Figure (cartoon, rainbow, N blue to C red):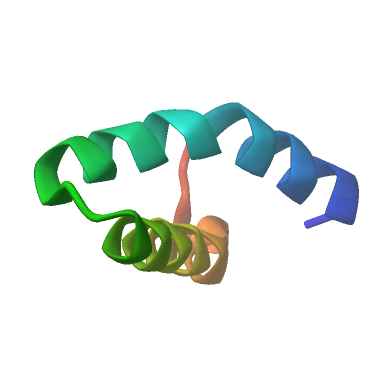
Length: 51
C-alpha cells in the first residue's frame, strides 16, 4: 500500500473515527490512543479487505 493511499485514508477517516471515540470516552488522550490503534489494526489487516 502506497504512502499516498495511507495518507488519503487517514485524512478522510481520522476525524470520523476520532469524534466517534471521543464522544464515548470523553477523554482526549484516550481518544488519541484508541484512534491510533484503530488505524494500526486497519493497516495491519488491509490485505484481508475484500472490496
